[in-house]
Image 1: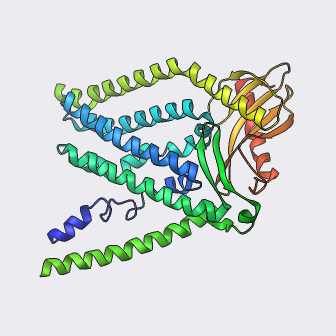
Image 2 (image 1 turned 60 degrees about the vertical axis):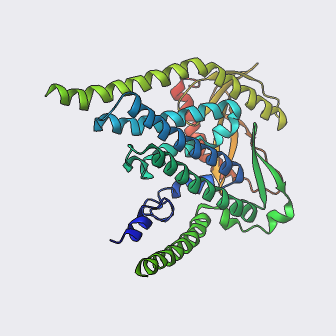
Amino acid sequence: MSSQNRHLDMHPFWGYASPLYSLWAVGFLVFSSSSLAYGIIAFLDILGVFLASSVGILSFLYLFNIKERAAWQILMILVPAFVQYVFLLALSFISPILYLETFFFLLIVPFLFLSSGIPMLDFSFPQRVVGQSIIKALIVGLLGLALSCIREPFGHGSLTIPTRYGAVNFLSSEQSASIAIQLLASTAGLLILFGYVVALYRFFRRVYRHYLEQKEGE
Amino acid sequence: MEHRTLRRDVVLPLVIGVVFLILGGLSWYLLAPLKNASFKEALQYLLKERGYTYTLEKEIPGPGIFKTYQLSKSSHILVVFPVLYQGRIYLYGKVINGEGTFVDTCLLSYHDTAMALPPTRLLYVYENRILHHLRRLGAIQ
């Protein structure tokens, strides 16, 4: 394999472990992109959990000089789960209603951390681990936000924001609701929309790979 | 088993697990009363906002997605739960009397006339689950 191809395959956005390539975040996106309010909460959650988990795991490994694989593996499970628990606890204080509405899909986030490919990285390079965690969380979080900005206005004819008393509509009217394409708001609609996003991603990935190969040939 | 293998594969993961368990348990124990007060206050506010006159008395703790409250000045119970419909999550409350009969349904989520609400038949699905949940808690016969 050429060095350019290896660089592409290891890239956090274009590589094999990218959420758009291996699709490890589809289940999470189904719920988080259903409305803008949930999208914002999910974005904050995934960014916080990925960042705090990678920093937490790195701190454990360095402070206690852990080299044993079994201990390392249990840290990979317990640290994201604990960070998620802290986030949900904070959310239940800040907005108990949003907590009741979102907690069952936010519980997926620690599993996303495990399947994102971050635990497979070499933890002797802390900057790379933290950098990859932020990039992967940003990709999934921003994708959720972007999809929610399409799904909610076009599917429901409204936009919601998170408040202390749940998700509140700040843009809504009977006219916009009557012309909304309700299919987009459903899970099937998200999967159709996501299919187009992935098709576009794969097209641009092929173009980028071709460009890298040409560049290497010169 | 060799001493080093025992330490590596059993003792260390066990110690880490116990530390996290203590941390989680302690924070849960210390913060649960505050958390419950926060839920009660928010739900009471929503009930008032949506025009319901029910007053929450005390929470009946239990597992799962249902939050259960005893209502004041009656033997009625309010069960709050989220309903997923067409990509939205709606917060509903069901009021049940002491004999296990449903007497009222409250929509607690914000909604306007433009929003499509879940059909009644979808809410029926939850009724059996609620009754099962309350029987398990010993709140009804």
